[in-house]
Image 1 (cartoon, rainbow, N blue to C red):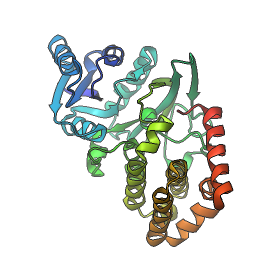
Image 2: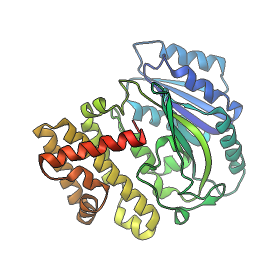
Image 3: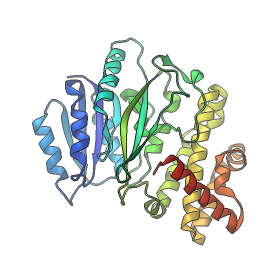
Image 4: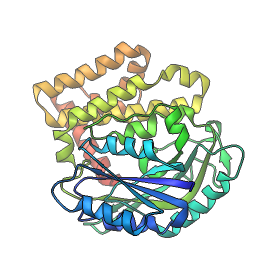
Length: 342
């Protein structure tokens, strides 16, 4: 049976919270496929929970049990096996709004019958700060035309807090395969590659002002927790380097000015985050890695290096000296409190 969309749910020791995620997806009905990727879970009942869902919903849920390969390999496995026309990753501690899901599926069904495929569907996501009982909606009404097909030439300017994240996008499955998307194993923060690498292949887009994805924030072991990010900063740097290597940004800027501007801004954000967490770590080795990262960018594209280091938000991570580094961290933490992004 063909499916409108495949939801891939990478699961690693997720028994405490994955039921909520899967239950919201199941409201999509027979038009959806859910691929639960058990990423070598050993500490709880995640494998058994996955198998139970596959037995209860054999026409909707499939399970892949794999040796531990990290979140990226879970995404890869879902993509390799997806039968849906569209593909979305939902982390096992997150969930979808059921009413918004029905509206999104209705629109995707409509596009599935058209001759020209839609490449990317965009909706809002919501930061759910569960322990604080607060939420923040990230919407794109100032960036994208609503309720019509558009291309990169029709977009507005993104605010610094408005980057497209894995939570906000639904890609056409074949497009992801055609662009050669393959996320690295055993690496955190690969969702940035997922939402960045395919963009030049995207031609036709559609945005609905729906609060679809609910992004849970608050677990102490969560990958976006500041303490955790410091311990994994090498993986953040690795992802940033891969993004530098993934595209010729000057060529993209020449061919698609607005897309190139956005991708340059996104890369600047990644350079800033990498720089800030290397500064927070504060060891001579980490400060040396910060210098190495910027020098690597210089070897790839000297003009882009100067643009990002001195004329973009990346300057926040490049204030000179000890006091400058302290100021960089202070600004980051103020922005984090303001936008509540982790």
